[in-house]
Length: 354
Figure 1: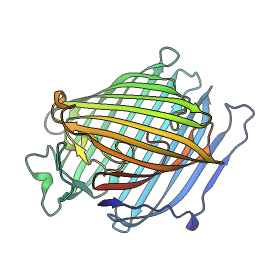
Figure 2: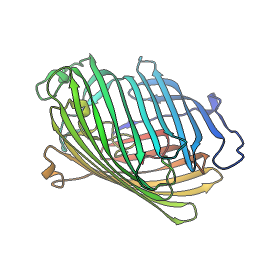
Figure 3: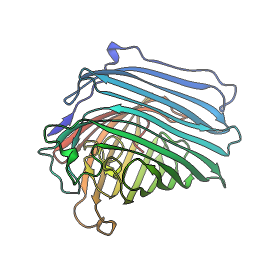
């Protein structure tokens, strides 16, 4: 069983969380900072920090700024900054994410039937960013547009040098930049730990520049629905689908696995030109600021979109705990333990998986 174990050692670090008093529910802010330590079978001992700032910049909307950075004894490094800012007029929203990573990864191959037995190791280094500006058209309907780029290089080829085989498109790296656009229906009460409402996001990616090869296009559909079953109990349902056309580098291909898409499987465990995923969460209160969840998911990938429903779906399931920093604004730390076929994992993060 390939399993990753992560430990947040709160006993060895000091966590800080506070909220400044607000004259109205739309004022004030919440700050949370967390030093972290962890151990995984792939990285050895690691350490880092994460922080979250939540603030009210528009009526009935909570803006957030998140950062996280980790480093390990094997000189593996990950960093990310995310921003979601609502403008004071309540009709515009900025979303942005910037990452820099240098981290060893496992390559399992392409398709829905790859084996867990002998993945090939390689180490990529990449910087990437994506940003968009959304404009409110009606009460819950937004139109959005923006851009993205990713620059990836191959630092270590691994013993098998799998990244330079003909079947791996642009395995040694490439620079891509392009535009995004789409429509968003969002009636959720908050974006990180929704308790009611729904989301429908149709998003389109189109490269306008790449330093080698040809461009690509990608269409993504994200549908989420939340409803309250009883006080404190929330049912969350999620459907996600993606498909690509053109000359797409392997690291952009739609993939399943990790802490948000098919928990219980490694990051990028299943990859191909199309994927379909269903997820279901049941979230409930336990005591004070502590909550719990049970969840299940099923997904598959396919080379051709017409084959996406043909064949087996990979299933993951598990349970977790939640610690609410600020329940009204949906600021929560989650700890999930999940299992899949011959696979498993533990995930610690800010916000729900969807």
